[in-house]
Structures are given as structure tokens and as C-alpha cells.
Length: 436
Ligand SMILES: CC(C)(COP(=O)(O)OP(=O)(O)OC[C@H]1O[C@@H](n2cnc3c(N)ncnc32)[C@H](O)[C@@H]1OP(=O)(O)O)[C@@H](O)C(=O)NCCC(=O)NCCS
Image 1 (cartoon, rainbow, N blue to C red):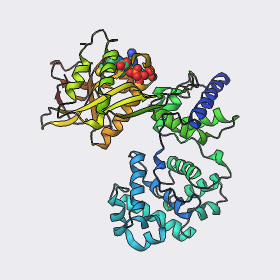
Image 2 (tube, rainbow, N blue to C red; image 1 turned 45 degrees about the horizontal axis):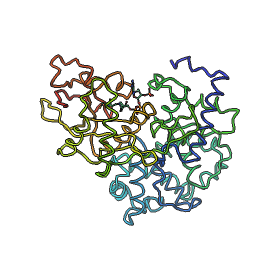
Image 3 (spheres, rainbow, N blue to C red; image 1 turned 90 degrees about the horizontal axis):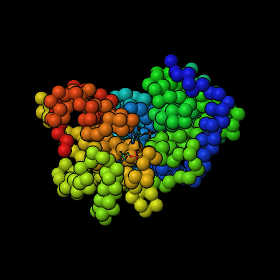
């Protein structure tokens, strides 16, 4: 059951609309964390060209179980490579056959699965070629540019549009088409909020659902319905708020639309040696607020940077208007497992300038670090810390995974914690770790 406390009273709707107004403003000002959307990595084709429509359609059907930024970067590489560019032209795809298509799609990793993904791509090309003269624009025109008709046609002809006809991805695809092509849909209101993880998190943050509701299997349709209800009498269509909600969540909710319109232009970037003195002072100031701290965490960080386990790409700083307000380091360590060592990461230290506590800076740095960690092939992070703080950041005691600290002979400590970056990453791994 979705919880009742989120029932949409008129007062609640008014409050959420106030926050939405601020978020839209922050988005317009470009201050929602300064992030770009995954689809922004594109070759900048003419918006109204058939090629542009196909560019934003075909990869969409492979957009699952992976980081969207990676997909669109791979798509761009595929488009720029003259040996693979023809995969964006349905007639050429149908002519080349499945084996050549497979090779081209795998080259830059647009396809990850060697069989299923090329089949999906081929079927879509056949559909567009045979029924709409190779043009997504023609497909839209045949449906009077009407979202309801397009959705109806695809739902009735699911086999012609593998994966793309799934309710969630179809909706999201139509949103992308509205953003990145010159399509003007007659009934934009029929594109519902596309509730991916970020939109769900942002909806919970605004009180549309509770954080617990996110685990509910019906949550996506409930979130769409609730946004429809909230925005019904407003000047926005549900899909208008997708990008602001998405960016807001992805930047770790740094901007607080409910608190004020003041926004921070925070950048999270790799630490540079010239930052070391400022980081030293920052770590010292942050840990001075911790009663049980050793007081030498800043020196520990200096030593850490000299070790072979240090990964420069995973030493990040958060900067607001040329001032460093946070730092985070994730370094490599090995889990001593019966079957042999397993390499993963330790998060330590993380610090934020005390004047900036509880504005989501640590969370934003962590999210960025996790993305980089995933790109580097790591799938879990460990740390020693206060469970009261880190539970809220997605960590659970590592003993729950069967992995304990060497200083915890009972294997029950709640201060040695872990977070999987990929669900199931620690399945089947037991053993001990040592974190200084
Ligand atoms: C721990 C620290 C890095 C958190 O930084 P921060 O930017 O204030 O944290 P965030 O605002 O991103 O908080 C994210 C979440 O962490 C949890 N959290 C952060 N500080 C917390 C605290 N003092 N008590 C309980 N939970 C806390 C909450 O779940 C919070 O989410 P919420 O604000 O939505 O409730 C910061 O307090 C700090 O530098 N402390 C001193 C150094 C330190 O203890 N480092 C950690 C040991 S290595």
C-alpha cells in the first residue's frame, strides 16, 4: 500500500506547487547543480531532420539497466565513427543484416547484449522502413502528432516496437522527442511524468510520496497520477517538470526550493594538487566538530594520497564560488574472502565545511563519486562511521553482507558499513576487511 500521509490536500498541493515554481526558476537560471542531461551528448543534428528523429529513437529502446550517460556517449561515438554511422539509417540497417549490425552496435557499446539488442534495433528499423518510409516523423504524422494516438498505436502493435512500446520507456521517449526534435505534440499533457529513480527521489523529497513508498512496486504509476493531480490546475504539464526534478535529485538536492530561491552554483570536480592546502584546512575544520575524532584526519589524508591504493579520479572536491566546501576520497581495498581477495572501495575521509552542513553537499559528492567508481568498475563501497549518519546515505552494517572488520571478532558491529553500487554486488562474498 502507498502511505496515506501523502494524501493531496489543497494545502499540500499549494505547497508543492510553490516548490515547483522555485525549481522551475532554478532550472531556468541553470543553478540546479549545473548538470547536463544524458541526451545532451548528441551530434547537434538539425532538429527537424529525419536523421535527428532516428538518432533519439533507436538507442532509446536499449536504454535499460545502465547509466543513461554511458548509452548516449556510446551513441555519439557510433554516430561519429564512419564505419558505424549507418546504423542510424533504417534502409541501410535492413540491407546490412543482423551480423553486420551486431558488430557495429557492439563496437562502441551501444548494444551490450550481442543477440537481443541488435534484434530490437533491427525490428525497429524494419518497422520504420516498411511502414513509414524510414521516418519517425512520418510515424508521428500518421498519428496526427497526437501522443494518445501514438501511444495507442504502439500499444496495439507491441511487436513492431520492441521495448520502446513499454509504458515507461515510451513515455520517456516521447518526452525526449519533445525536447530534442522539432515535434510539437497536439496533446503534450498526455506525456506523463517519467518516474525514473531521480524523479521518484525528488517526488519523495517534495512529499508527494514517502521515502518508503519508493520500494512499492506500484510507485511509478502512483507518482504519475499524483503529479497529474498536483499540476492539473497549474500552468505546467507533468512532463515539463521532469528535467528540473531529475537534475535536482541528481545534484543531491543541493538547491532547496522550499527554503529559499537562493541557489548555489556548486561544482564537484577532481581534486588538484593546488587544492591540497585548502583541503587540509577544510578537513581540519570539519573534524574539529567531531568529539571522538583523532584530530589528525588532515594528515591522514596527506599520507593516503601517497599510497598505491589512492585513485586520483576518486578524490573529489565541492566548490561554491571558488571556495572549497567539501572533499571526499574513495580508495581501493581488498576484502579478504575465502576464495581470494576481492577489490572494492573504502570511503574515507569525507568532510564538509561546518557552515555548509546539512545542505546535501556530502550526498552530492558521494553520488558523483559512485558514478565515477562504477565507470571504473567498482561495485561496492565500505566505511567506518556513525550508523546514525550513514544509514540515511544508503549504508547498512557490512556484517549484513557477511563481511566484517578485522577489529570486530563478533562480526556484529554496526559501525563498519557497506553500500552496494550495483544491487547484488556483494552476493556470495564473505570475509573480512581492514580500514584504518
Ligand atoms: C558527515 C558530513 C560529511 C556530512 O556532510 P553534509 O554535507 O552535512 O551531509 P548531507 O547534507 O549531504 O547529508 C546527507 C544525509 O546524511 C545524513 N546526515 C548528515 N549529517 C548528519 C548528522 N549530523 N546526523 C544524522 N544524519 C546526518 C542524513 O541522512 C542526511 O540527509 P538529510 O539531510 O536529507 O536528512 C559532515 O557532517 C562532516 O564533514 N562532518 C565532519 C567530518 C566527519 O564526521 N566525516 C565523516 C567521517 S569520515
